[in-house]
Structure formats: C-alpha cells, structure tokens
Image 1 (cartoon, rainbow, N blue to C red):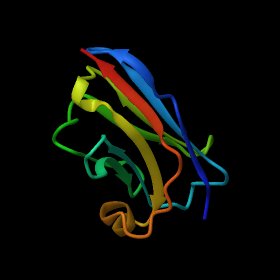
Image 2: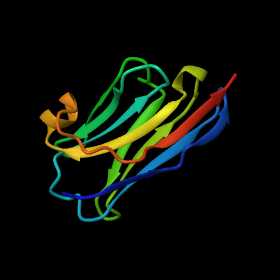
Image 3: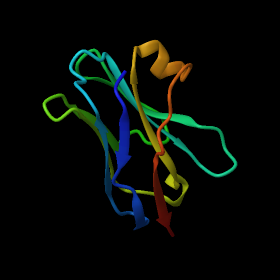
Length: 121
C-alpha cells in the first residue's frame, strides 16, 4: 500500500484559491479510486471529492462547482483545486487511495497528517 503525503494548505481569504497535492510513495496507476476528505474542529471527517475508474468524479454538494479533483499518474500525485473558498471550508484536508468501496466508506483508511486549510472572512 502506498504512503500518501498531503501538502498545499495554508491561510487564504474568502474567495481565494488553493491547490492541494497528495504525493504517493509509489505508483498510483493501478489504484482505482482516490479521494479527498476534510475534518473541521468538532466535526466528523467528511468526504469532499472522489476520482475513480480513470476520470469519473464525485463531489460533495458543499463543494460542487468550486473544487476540482484530478490525478497525475505519471507524477503519482492527486490534486484538489479549490476556488471561491469560504470560511466553512476551513478544515484539515486528507487524501486516500484504495478501492472505491473503501474510499466511499472510509473503512480501513490509513490517514496521514493532513494539511490545514484556513479561510478567513
């Protein structure tokens, strides 16, 4: 199983943009599904975006139209482009790579350190 390291978080004003990266320690070519999640203080971790079966994507309603998930198999990296950021997007963001079932259920996911995103109003 590949190790994943998230990066790209930071402090940004509302309306701004950030691009998160999730670098894998090995090849992600054969991994069917990858996802981004977030956890705000005092809240449960939630699924934000999924990419699977090549280029099929799914987004949580709260980020639809603002966030874009993509993967670069050549660079073994997953991305999350976040535009029109809102204060409610403030959270620690995590990535995962596994079967679609694991990505959707979060069952058995080994979480990394995540990357903090803070959006000021």
